[in-house]
Length: 213
Image (tube, rainbow, N blue to C red; front, side, top):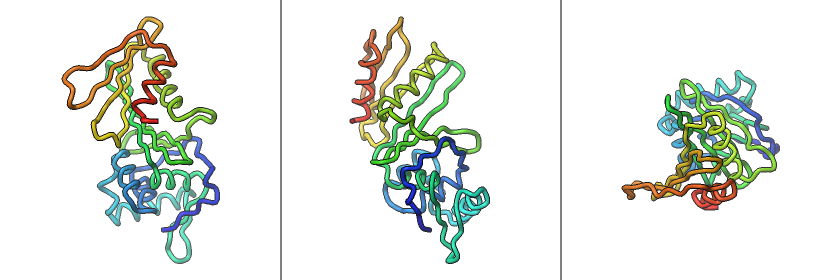
């Protein structure tokens, strides 16, 4: 498979991909980064499955998101190439859990040096990939996701962790009285260290710390 990146700076607005398509795009440039991205998006077990990758390639071509070249190789360009490039070159994968009393949702940030994408899961291991809002730093984009969730679900909560962090350190966020209550923990800790009364700037600083910016 080959990857065309002449439009490397083209970011997708919001494109849905099935699990086989994600596995195919992650397989286009093999390496540790692609494996870690596939693990974050829950498709790592399919990377070596030729039937799944072939099905994903066929689906991408059928949807006009990729082209089958004369030599049988798969070629991608534009937004699809941006997704493939991010999966295979990412250096940071941020997992945001959005919690409510009824359950929760999640957002995965896949970040390479030049491409920052957000992935949101849907049914049957489908992922929606969307570009980070222009003009925001990755940390500010994480803050925006958390704030929007807690605006809609004021009694809910959110967690944020960097998947590459071996200690598993996690940031917990919930709303206070006109402020934010945050806590940090790791698997080695028995209790969550909690702070109250934080403003947006202080919460952003905590997010940057967890991100290791």
